[in-house]
Length: 216
Length: 331
Image (cartoon, rainbow over all chains, first blue to last red; front, side):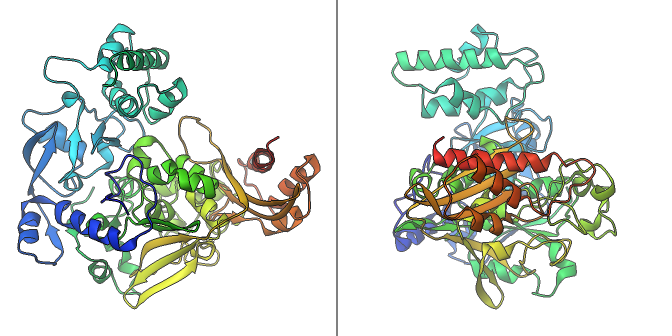
């Protein structure tokens, strides 16, 4: 296995030939992908005991490039943590269905879109969380966000952050994404206003701008 | 969801130690395994399970292996559906598996959902998923779908429960002749994936597979299919993303314009991936034409017993068999 170390870190991972190399890599995950300070302490002590977390625990999350300490329970979802346990609260990801059906809570975990309502906060430790608030520097918009404004990509706007997160990941991988690819990239997001045509126009326009700028 | 203790084990042996004993059926749901979480979190939120402990498999090394040798694959339980979908190598050698992985849920679900989780996910029947409906799947005495609203339920292999197995990956992997390796307190065992899934009439009605309370699915092995072509065709009510109303995994080995060998497995119509051996045998020696398609569809759905609201699944699945055959014939 090349140097891919977890199911989450490679954009496109091809199967490997060597088992031994894999296990070497996997060791890195076990040390680096665990939860909370208790876990890091356990890793330092080279203890191989399972780590147990119960009740309210303090976690350190990597959100939008900054370290954020939160006190949550193991059952707390990442979405709940972002909206209710961060300082300041990150309310861009929306709570709608809370069942992984609507996409309004979409964030990036290690650069890939996921439903934050279907992710436990403890499971996000050691991984990079990006929310709509962290896509562009404060006060600025990405090409895609600007295109949503220019092409009326929002009506009520509630689903918009989720759509932007899904399509951002798609354009990041391929600024020349076709309409079909864009549609597929956000097929896990619902818009009850039905603004889909404008969303797709905005996405295609942002792709053109990104290509003209030669990348992101 | 109910509060639980979250445990991050460091080895697979620790995972198995944390599980109940092999005969502890009654307490098996006190410990739940977390992989991608895309099914488990829904179950927890609906209180369909309320475990005391959730054991995270992602801290266990070795479960994400995705290895290929001479066209054979080893897929660790934690390999994501997105990885399968995006693997050019798998798409070349086992198109139906890559296509099935890509047909699961949405991008967000495929980025987290895993091979093991997809194969072990619980049914989507709305009676099962309703917190207050104590149906036969949850230890009750009755399958409410049987006499109730059963548009999405089984037409084959039903009784006493009429769920359909929700996995897309399962029919494709069964058609590929895959095996599953399970690890329990007494060591590992390997079963044909086809035998991993159980009908409600043959296994425990509250479960869908042979996993004992002390066992965890650790990997799937997929044999080489040199000389075969394959495809996965899925029909859903909502085209953006949805579970299958019916699906077909089809693999063919052609010889001089005629079918030399065939594998045909239906999804979305039965409590298990539904292997159609009679249709497979009848396909051998035939060219892919209208008669062949209609014969295969007829034999594949032989014995179907639709409930009040799902007779549409018979012609739907037959149409998908035709579509899959036509696709592989390039016509």
